[in-house]
Length: 191
Ligand code: MN
Image (cartoon, rainbow, N blue to C red; front, side, top):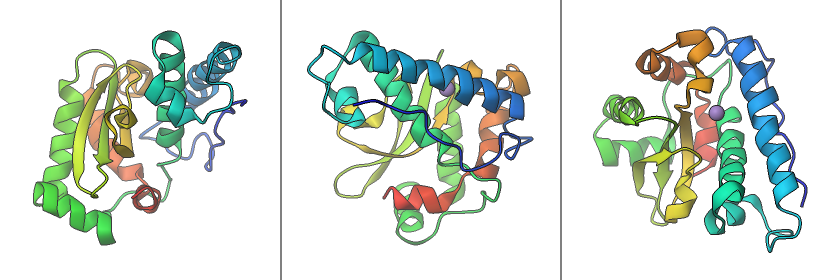
């Protein structure tokens, strides 16, 4: 199976000022493209030639896991944003967030705290289990909640390449601003 770079549904400057055109061009056009190319080079000759991306992430290790994980992570990441994003979730997702954290505001604080507290590079995720119960997971490097049997709903990238051109060392400020561009319809569709 050949993996492709996910298309952006918005212009490269459409998420400014939260994510600049320059950051999108490097992050999507260079970093993610490299993970896609590496994955396509690593899969041939392995038992993963005819399986989907999530299966590779769940069952592989080493370089294959790192590149497959980053392709999955960034595909979820770049498709969860919109220039018309922001606001709050609704419906089943809003109810599940309230059940887990008491309020949307508390959930936001918990996710930001998890992201600020993650040492080095990685991701923080909102994930659900098979009963629909939500949790926040912290994943180092290329990690994704699918390796824990969970479904990823929303992921914030805390690798410096995600924010350094725009926020330098201010990871906390970047995470706080990301809420302005989250497309909750997309996140709800992952429930
Ligand atoms: Mn990234």
